[in-house]
Amino acid sequence: MRPIVIRIKKGTDGRTFLSCARADGTTTWQRQQGGQARFFPRHDLTHYAVETVLGHRRGFYGLVAAGWDLSDFGTPWPRGELPKDANLTEIIVGFFDRERASGQMGTAEELNVHLAEFCVQNELPAPERLAEEDLSRVRQKRGELFAQWDAVEPGDALELPFDPVALARSAAD
Image (cartoon, rainbow, N blue to C red; front, top):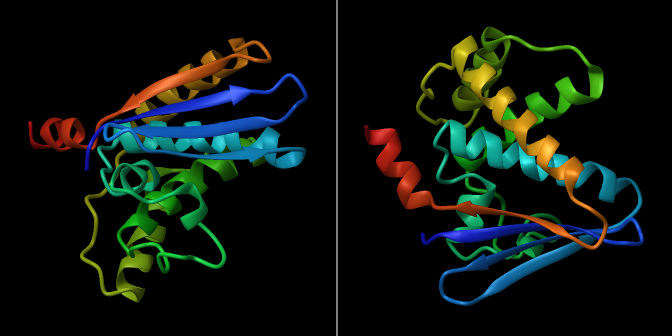
């Protein structure tokens, strides 16, 4: 896995565009419109917050860095379903998306129970338990990213680096 540059662009017509440029020069991208253009930038920024703050190298952006194209994520699943361990990141991102939609904050205990149940059902080792402080750090990073996104003018983009190797090093420290 090599670093990627994530670029989320606000179109002048309300559409949004997500592109990820890899170190080898390849790029994958997708365009969203309507309700998806309103939902996905914040969802994608939540992925970034979760994956960078918690050190998830094999979440959405880690898979893109490993060569997955954005079209690989969804029906008809050209690469097959997500690796089971990547679903842990999806569960955490979904937790934060539900908070955003409902306006009600969840607890680390609720999230830990959900993650543990998924691991038992899928014969995965139990993940490291998350603390309230972990959730607070993700929420803080997500808030910073949302503020950056809100400041992007139509026609401009927000660019973010993602380096799964650096995440591995910082997780080991």
